Image (cartoon, rainbow, N blue to C red):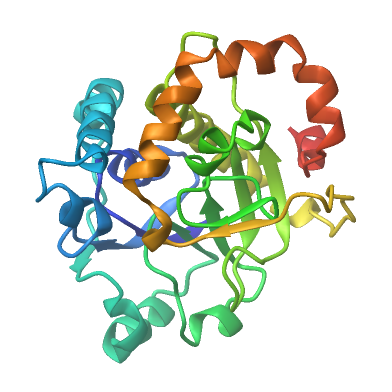
Length: 271
C-alpha cells in the first residue's frame, strides 16, 4: 500500500511518521513535513516569563524522554520534503507531486489545516489523526481543554476521513487512553500518540471493511477551541485541577461516565 504522510516536526510527529515507515506492506512514497518555524510552540517558547512557556517546555522534555528510544531505532522516510507551515495549500508543484506519486492513502497528523484539491480528489482516502474526541472537542488543544474543564473522559484520539471543515469528517475509529492516577497531561498525551500509532496499521488494513455507522454522541458537549484561546489562566487552572485529584475522581466512576459520553470505537471488532 502506497501512503503519503503530511505531519509536523515535533518529536511526536517524527515518531509517528517513522513508525508508519517501519510497517510491513506499507510504502511511504512521500513525506511532507512542516518545519517548526512560526508554529505556536516556537512563538510561545520565546517568552520565558509565562506559564505557557513552562507548559510547552515540559511537554518537549516529556516527549524527548518518551520517544527518544523509538526515534533512535526507527528509520526516517527517504522521500521527505520540508515545507513552511501552511505552505502545502498554495504549492501547486508539491500538490502535483503528491498526485503523481499515486498514493492509496494520504495521512495527516499535526499539520496545518489543509484547504486544497487533495481533499476532493482523495475522498475517503485522506485520513487525519485528530488528537481529541470529535465532535465533543474540535479545533486545537483538544486533549488540553478537557483537563482544563475537568472532563478527562474526553481525552483520546480520532481517526477520521478529512473534509473541508475543522475536525468534521466522518469518524473511522476513536479510543480513550489508559489513564493512571499519577499521570500528568504530558504523560497522557504521549501515551495517546503511542496507542494511536499502534492502531494505525490495523485501521489501514481493515479500511475496506469500514462502513459508516451512526454514533449517538451526547449533544450536551460540543466545544471548539482555537490557538488564541490558549491563555495563562487556562494553564493555571489546569495545574489546579491536577492538584485536586481530578484523575482519581474520574477513575473511580470511569465506566459510568464513559457510557454516558459514547464514542465511535466500533472498528475494534475487526482487529
